[in-house]
Structure formats: C-alpha cells, structure tokens
Length: 240
Image (cartoon, rainbow, N blue to C red; front, side):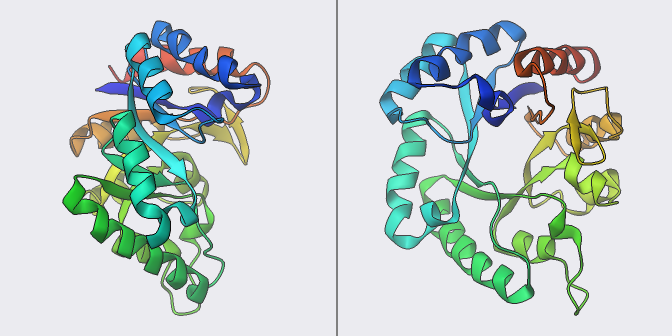
C-alpha cells in the first residue's frame, strides 16, 4: 500500500508559492509517494506538475469547492487536474444541513460525476461527522452523497460520529475510492497513534477492499511537519 498526504495537514507552513512547493521534497523524504491538494496557492498546473515530478511524487486527488464542479467550471477543473496527473477530483464538503440542501449539493455532484467518467475522472465527496446524523426521514446525508458520486471516507470523522469503520467500509466498498486515515481525541486532532481512532481497523479494511492509497490527514496543533513525520513513521510500521 502506498501513502499520500493531504496538504491541508501542513497549512500553517505555507506562506507563499515558494514555501508551498518546498514541501514536496520534504514529504518525499518522509516516505510519502503522493499528495492530495487542498488549494494551489496561486501555482499553475504546469508548475505544480513539474514540482511533483522533480520531487518524485504523484497527485492522488484534491479537495475543491462545489462551484468548481458546476457545469460552467467543470471543464476547466478537469483540465487542471489532468495536467497534475490525477484521475480523481474531490470535494472537501458541501451544504448538507437539511435534506433539501443535501439534495441540491448532490444534484451538482451527480451531474459532474456523470460528465467526468467518460474523461477517465472520478468525482468523490469527503465527509466530516455531520453527514452521519439522520434527517427526519431516517436518511443520512452520506447516503445521499454516495448515491451521487464516489466517496472519500474520512475515517476519523466517521469514528467520531459513532460509526463502525469496518462495517462502513465493507458496506460501501463499491463507492469508496479513497480513505483518509486520521487520529484525534474528541474533536481535536492528534498525530497517528496518539488518539482514539480505530486505526488498525482502517488499515485492515482499506487493504481488504484493495485500495491503492492511504491518505494521511493531520489536524493536530503544534509543529505540523513533526506531526506529519510521526504519521509517516506510523504508516511505515503499521500499514506497509
């Protein structure tokens, strides 16, 4: 299994384009083979691709906004992501406070998902914890999102919402294209192995359904590079 890192994990270290691109070789040294973007900090697609290639990394996905997937913007989004070499485009969340709001979000996602597939691209939705709270009709937002597009399961937020990650992953293996492995206590992030999440279960389930990548996301406070380094070491020891 290969390891990628969501670049939001290092958000406080990015001051400009130069500091952003300087992260790539450091992450390669830690043992990551890929990165998942959460913004591009003004860098063009070609410059980013060169920086990835120079560092020996690949782009495994991204978190963009719902507007980026609307019909008037989708072609530009796909072109940008293809230049980076990725075949998956993610969205880091969308309005889902009510069933009606969720349905509106899903309408955009479903249309984008259908349009992207012939171009070899998969659209995926990244959850937090609120998507697992049932509406009055008993349906959860996550059920609506998985009907609209593929999923990237954030396994810490599903765990924090009281879900059984093994069952959740097994039951949705046809829709899950990626998982975030993350740790924490309550709603506070921790480095992998320093929180309460069922990390071993996440690794076992990801391997069971044949995922190529585990994507580390770290939301802990303090020295973010140190925390990501701890995560990389945990992954090498426990998920390699």
